[in-house]
Structure formats: structure tokens, C-alpha cells
Length: 243
Image (tube, rainbow, N blue to C red; front, side, top):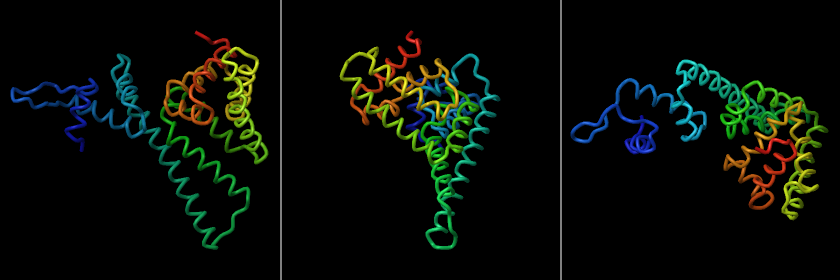
């Protein structure tokens, strides 16, 4: 089910090399290559980028059986998320058709679950690989348990981070009082989801803002070009993890 064009591309980037090439120029693949392709496709289904896949499956410590078990766990989690989303959509359809009623609390719970599902679909593979399933599950649980008042405070803090970041960038100094205030606001914002604070994790997240184009685009679009990099530098100074 893989196109010749894709196979050639995987060969070009040294992600999947053929076992050998025939005298007439055909790429020939054996069982080991088929198994490797299966791993690539599993990771792709989870949204992992090709560069990261190559790094993962080419590592000397790569354990194929452990990777398969991890794939199964993540795919089951994804199925649960889709099932929840379908249930929410069906309930909302029934509400619109006048078949049921929903309290504001139920609507709010459905909204939060949809947000979690969307975040998992966009960033789940990367952040779970970076921080582990336990940490992300705890963060999702914290969001689910937020009251409407807490959610409003969390959203307000997120706005303050962006507004203060824009003012801090005008100073040009990540170590400036305004930049450090931005980093502190960002810490407060994170704590709503994390429930506890870890300097190394904060610094790691800041680095991801620059390393992952999607995170970079969020801050650069919301504030101005260079915002993600400036925020990273401010947080690294704030945490003391500046190497």
C-alpha cells in the first residue's frame, strides 16, 4: 500500500534502504525491511515526523517489541479519544434536535474534552514522547477537573503571557524585568495544567516552542516574529537552565 514515490523518498533520506538493488535497478526488500516499514507507518499514523522516526528506529537501543506495545497503547488511547468525541457530537446533535437537554456544566465538560482531543491529535505524539504518558494524562485530568472559574482564570493568564511578551520584546532583553515577568506568568499558566512546577520541564517546553514549527508559529503569529525564541530565552534565564 506504499507508493513507489514514497519508497524512493525513504531510500533517499536513508530511512528505509533496500536489502539490495538488482542488476536492472529494481529495489529489492526482505523481511527486515518490511518490518522496518511497518514501524515507520505506525509512527506516521501517530503523527511523528520522519526525522524523529529515523532517529528513533535507528538508535542502537531501539526495541521493536517494546515499540509495538507502545504503538498499541497509544492507538488504544487515540481510539478512546475518538469514541469520546463521537459521543459528544452525537449528544450535541440530539440536543440541537430537541431530543435531550444539556446543562451548562455538561456543555462545559464536553468543550474541555474536545479541547483535549484536538490537542492530542495535533501534538500528542510529540509531547508524550518528550514528557511521558503519565505527565500528559495528569495534565489532561487537571483540565477536565477545572471549574468554569478556574478555566476563565487560566485563559486570562494565557492572554497576559502574550500581552506581556509583546511588551518585553520591545526591550530586546530576555533578562529584562518585563521578560522575566512573562516567564513567571508562563509558569503560573502551566501550573493550572501541571499541578506542580519543575524547572527542567519548563525549560524543556520552552525549547520545544522553538524546535517544533507548530509551537513557533503559534507564538510568532499571536505576538510577532521571533516571539517563541524570545520566550524560550526568557524562560531559560528564569529557570536557570540556560545551557
